[in-house]
Amino acid sequence: MSTIFEKILAGEIPANVVYEDDDIFAFHDISPQAPVHVLVIPKKKIRSFSNLKDSEIEFVGRYMSGVSKVASLLKLDDSGYRVVFNHGKDGQQTVDYIHAHIIGGRSLTWPPG
Ligand code: 5GP
Image (cartoon, rainbow, N blue to C red; front, side, top):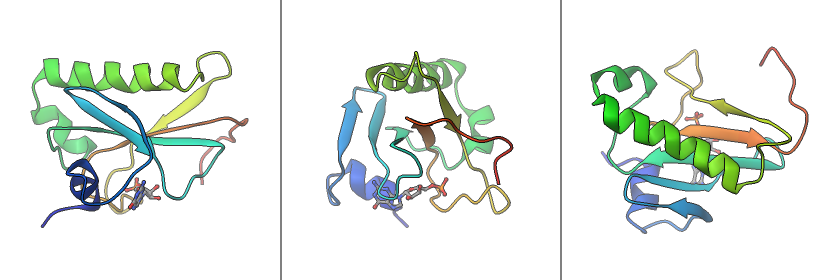
């Protein structure tokens, strides 16, 4: 079954797009938890963070590098930000398509809830 992010990627559901290239797609979260809350997904589907270990290292590198690039485009490098990957039930993953949350624009608390 197709996830909501596959539908966004296919243009079937609208999204507020931040950045796109051959490897990644970045868009604003529909329910932002901070002034800046952007999701970055690879165009090639990976179900979750735990599945990354089965992926080609070059692909993983391009994805991670892309997340860093998007954070820079969002002008968060100086103020700082957090990158979160939720995995599985305890991690509160709700969409079965890997996504990096880039969260910033305010001072974040630690530990997370
Ligand atoms: P998870 O809990 O799986 O780590 O994060 C899924 C994220 O996707 C949530 O932060 C949620 O707000 C976001 N989300 C769910 N549905 C949509 C949607 O249709 N559009 C956008 N832009 N974000 C969504």
